[in-house]
Length: 222
Image: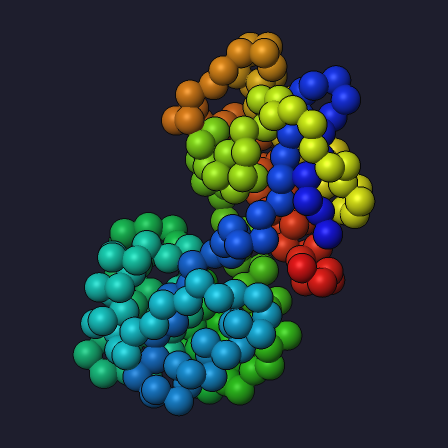
């Protein structure tokens, strides 16, 4: 298990905090309570625990506005507003990916992503990975990087235990750390405000880091 890491040149200190939530927020919309329960269970099984639910399309559009999910998974046949109506509403507001679930393949035309019922947890996971990967990288600030890692990456914190596992983790943090300062055009001895927006390269490195840590968590005992 990774506890902490200190680079000898007094440049880098990071700590892995397993309680930090790195998963995307997912909104599940379905008028069948049993399907909602199954979906929450499936999503938890494949590592997605930040899930909010809605009982129909009308509630779903309201939850979309209040919860601001990263992904929406909606049923097709629902009262008030069906799945296509939910998709159109969201598309008029944002580019948030929407997965439509239905046993009727005829409704797949015109949708972003379609899952034919019934489906397995593996199929669901692959679909989520696919639609997330196709989304543009959102702007990330220095403050968000600090919050995710647990400590500022550019401040020495004194002596610490040497990392015993996850040898690739500090290398990736170091790469991200250097990229942030290179794109900011300043030296690593300087301070960056928390609201500094990362450059495109740093944003992508940060997203890659989160995916990397997620994969390690799924295969480790932490």
